[in-house]
Image (cartoon, helix red, strand yellow):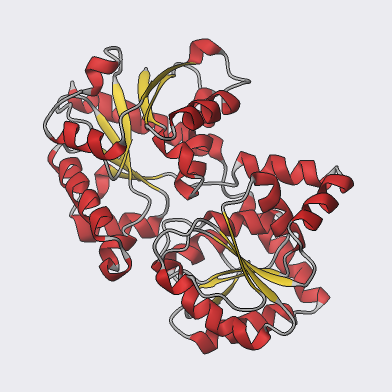
Length: 379
């Protein structure tokens, strides 16, 4: 089966980028699948190609083909809206196309599979950029009209898709994410290279103990409440925010011991986890929550939100709080910072159990079955 996979998101270095790269590599390990890797970017074209070449260096060339263009996403969206530049013209051999939920190709007869990570921007429109919300709404409409097969990353997200988009549950398949290979590899490199670990710690100026937040700085990540909850602890602990700025105006505060790192490399992220006292992840909504598994892999305690999706991923291995309460977040931070060794040891064992529940190979096998379903559906 020849599968078109949109890999444009690899340049963003966000959760969707981790999902794309890890799913891609796991799919390439399966027999009887060839991936036609499709991507478009003008300013980041060279970066996208370099990222793909790097990730595919150990993959046999007969398992994939690259179809990379230089059309800006906004222009491509307009062209596709007009029915121009169909995928079939770019790669005639494609049998199924796997898109992301914000942009769909114009090929009405091409079997379509799309990943919807979450509906946070629909549930909390006040936290979303209006143009982003409008693009997603257009895309969701197309997915419904074409009766596309939908992949999502948690049962909680599936429930939202059924209720809010009125897509039948039988057309939605849950394929869990797992610990990213990049994180695992960077952690192993740091663990076996003391000099490198110390160098990164020095370069990042990790002098004081700190609480870590990982993720894009957008309103649903709830940074404003986290910052307020942390402030009484700032004499003893820094708050480090690692992630791109996005559009959260509340997260542009500048004060002593509050450190915004922006995007970091995989090795830098591994070091940030390694030295962190805990990961604070009090999101208002998530599709999955990869940083939780990333922190678990480093044995770092996690404070997160008492939401169905977080309970689904973290189980009883994280300390859950009400994300709408600054006081609750503050109490949770203090609880984990003061946890004794016996409780920490028990929590670590729970983390390992949760990590082993998720793996990319299983996700790839389930995804391949959905491709087959989409293909048979169009016959």
